[in-house]
View 1 (cartoon, rainbow, N blue to C red):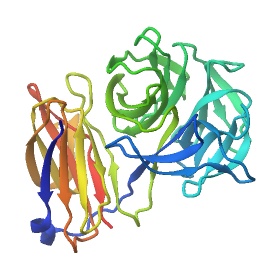
View 2: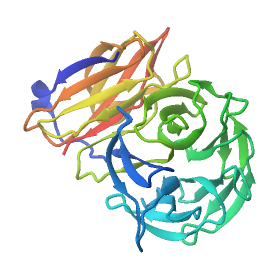
View 3: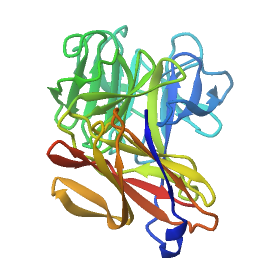
View 4: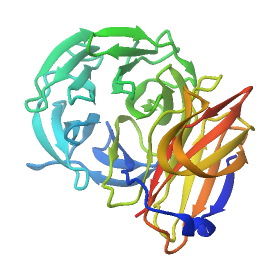
Length: 379
């Protein structure tokens, strides 16, 4: 069961002043079954919209093997199959689903990920001519240049960059830390470090992307959304309504539209998870939206703080900070047995188009830990 509280902001509306505007994030997925581009709800793990991927010169996509967003240009790229086993590197129009072919891949690549400087990396699958190997990929020609052999883990390969700028590689199906491995790669020095897996026992990770702070979001062989910390702790988030997701990417939406956007850092709990905070609904006047806490300790006291800015305060500690300063109000709650809490927020008619900032803190044994902060952009 989720614990839920309904909060009205009508009494506070007169206090609101213009604050920093920001963009939100939409989660997109592609898979190896139907060639659809979907938007996915983190709250329910279900599809909120979809569009068929079609080649600009004609023909529907049948399979996708990876997807990532260039942080420099903002362009989304995907590995798309239109006929047979030929994998094309394509740019995607997220509104229409039109895929423009950049070039044909030289091998059976299983996933792609952009570094912060716009360098595209790809990993080959176990059935490739050069299997389980990391490459860079030219985004103008699709030409691949080998970087390093990987090889750990059994079937299944995927990669994703995290907020710490490291590339994470997941491989394998079976027992954690035996058949399944999780590795951190410094792509500037080409050094690889094994990250021991703990927590939820997923099965063969198929896709991986950064969320915020120390959390990443992945999809596994059993069609489950799983949250991973960069320390290797896995936690189940939800069951997807579509199968064999091979690409996940968060895409910022224009700040002319209302959105929620996660940012900053949360603090690892003693058990290993980092509490995750995200929003749902459309934050516009007259609407009801939700702020949702997951992966906190079960049946523990917490506070949801609301602020007008994204400044920081060194509390509860310099390494575990409040990141929504100035804070204007805080509401107490108790998590469910699963460590969850849902806040439903009624935004009154006439509510000003500003940004509010949320962050949750929870008691964790003798310590106090915070989630990532969350920005609600009213429009």
